[in-house]
Amino acid sequence: MSPTNYLLLSALLFAVGTVGVLVRRNAIVVFMCVELMLNAVNLSLVTFARINGSLDGQVMAFFVMVVAAAEVVVGLSIIMAIFRTRRTASVDDANLLKY
Amino acid sequence: MTTSIGEAVGFWILGPVALAGGLGMVFSRNAVHSALWLVLTMLSLGLLYMVQSAPFLGFTQIIVYTGAIMMLFVFVLMMVGRDASDSVVEVLRGQRVAAAVLGIGLAGLMIGAVAQSITVPLATGAPPGSNIGGLGLLIFQRYLLAFELTSALIITGAVGAMVYTFAGRARSKAVTQRERVTERLRGPLEKFGSRSGPGVFATADSVATPALLPDGSVAPESLSEIIEATARERLGHSTELSRPGDTHDTSAHEHHSEQDRVQGSQT
Image 1: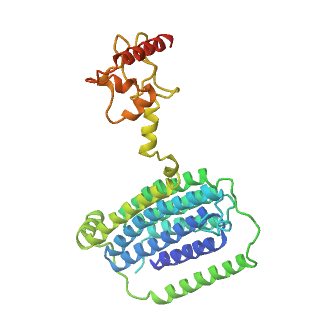
Image 2 (image 1 turned 180 degrees about the vertical axis):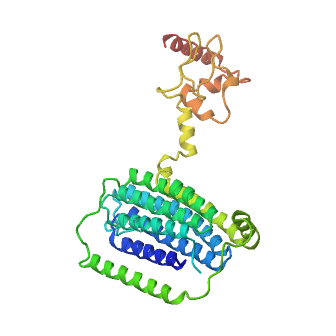
């Protein structure tokens, strides 16, 4: 088996995440699809690190994880704030940012 | 270069599981089921990292993603959107078909590009040195600035989360200083605090109420200079009459102290 298979799996996971972002209507599920795309990119970064025989790709994946954690905290609190004012978590209903 | 047999077995077990988790997340109606499918995907991805000689990232993936981030997702789902399953109504006509076509096209494009482009001879084996030690050297030496910026990012994220969480709640509760002063001058509320005990010759605990001497007259030391106006308003002009050195018209003084004593014993 060639390590390229990891990259193919990563591409498939990224495409699945993209379709989920486009299709789903619940804001939290959309957010989870974004997380899936980040994970797919992480897998490809780790695979690149292994192919090149260096650790830099793993460091990049580590930083991606940190940024994803911060992003999840802020994004989920935004969703909570929208839910508190609009009583909905659907991306179709939140068409005004002010009220 | 080909990998070992064990790694191939691990990949062909974990890869389809990860893909099934992703597809299940996209296609399940319930949001909580989506979260659980995503947990499956992240767990198998963490195991794939370990297979690929990245044990630190594998454990970090399991701890941070499945342990922290997905728990956060499930908490928010329980608070917000548990019963809000997706509607089957298409808001934009043909959007799902278009999304499916775009997804398949994207996957085909990337897979074709990857399959065509990766022809370089691959490095053999893991990089020298231990995985965690090498990562530590890289993070704290070459990527130290990025690491410090990461800490600033996390601080900003925490502050932002608190701002969004407490937005609109702190404004209604704010009590101005004048309201506090007014409240205190009005004396203790009926709901909390205690009235004066038996034998205490006072009708209120307010700082505007002066203390009374045993003969019923107002003790001048208990009158505050700052709230003199309030005391006068409450006691009539007996306050200014009882000031030390204020010796004219003692009959009025006696009269008012007599009145005070009568009122105090009645209450």
